[in-house]
Image (cartoon, rainbow, N blue to C red; front, side, top):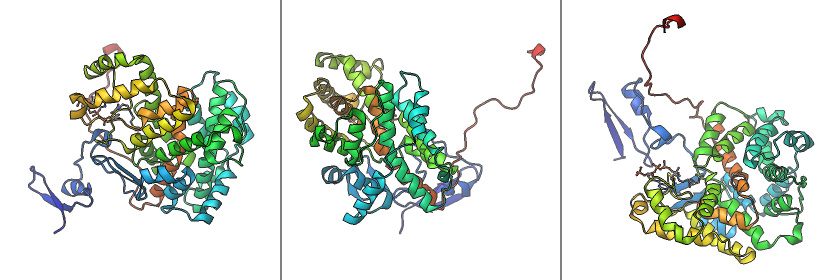
Length: 422
Ligand code: CMC
């Protein structure tokens, strides 16, 4: 006997029974009952808006898998480019496929000179690098008219390569402009993370400690995808209108920019800096609980009601990085915050645990990145997740243009009155 759910309309006595598959039942049941009946679900809390085979997330158990592979194994043994291939193609590459993929990504790292000279120079001298990146992603699309051919697989594949390969270049360009430094061209002899670090700091291959290069790659792996998060949902909504992938990725990056999403790692470091010392932690926690100190940034997640597995890996990576760079002085405050929060009934009862952003900012800071770059660092690897979902969306026959309905709560009809009579 399959699992089913029966919905009864008490107004009419009509009932509809539909199957429950993997904990999901089709909303068409409601349509069948009464086509003018809608489900009110602000923030899509109980809505599965698509089918997806990219990433599996069990928030209660704290499980995250890309295409079936546990995030812990990928972070331990894989590389970002291998993971990118996996997310896009569904399978890990063999040696020859990986080499070809690497070569292809590498051959697309350069950006058009107009992007570098004319576009970037138009920004105000203190522009936020994430604001610049969002605009740069959208602007990049104007250089590739074939990007509009979204139903042509070869065109899609080319745009995907371009976006993945050029994101580090755009990111480093945005950063260097924002601090008044000249552009550093990609060095395609370097690995993906080392090339990015070199474009940021112009250090050259030998100067990059392999432990830091690896840490950067692990952070890229951990941030590569996270199923239907706010940014990916933004991408899917824009993508459903058949916009080009650059415009879609710019929409996703815009969502990521927000402090409740990718901007949280930046907010965490600002929060830790404001707290100032471990002695101030209990008072800060009390303020958060009383609603005066804002939220505990880097804590809680819409889906995880357990430890975010990425936070556990990131905490370990932080120690690997601090071995090279020296300990970030904010670490002690973060550890104390975590300790106090996890022992406090407010956080326990609400199942609030550290999320991916709680420790990532500390690593970024130890690596020398300014706080304003943190969300940019999130956007670089998340690009592949966005694109995996974009591909999936376009090939999904059940998808149409996203167009939710509303619960109208405004006034009823009334007659316009000329201004003299108001
Ligand atoms: N600090 C203190 N209390 C919190 C926090 C927090 N960080 N997060 C949730 N709560 C409380 C909230 O006040 C509410 O309490 P009550 O039931 O008494 O009203 C309860 O927990 C449930 O919160 P919610 O607002 O319904 O949860 P949500 O799923 O809508 O919000 C969130 C999820 C991530 C936006 C939110 O937890 C938050 O603002 N966290 C801090 C920002 C952050 O770290 N964001 C990064 C998320 S992970 C990476 C990413 O998505 O990019």
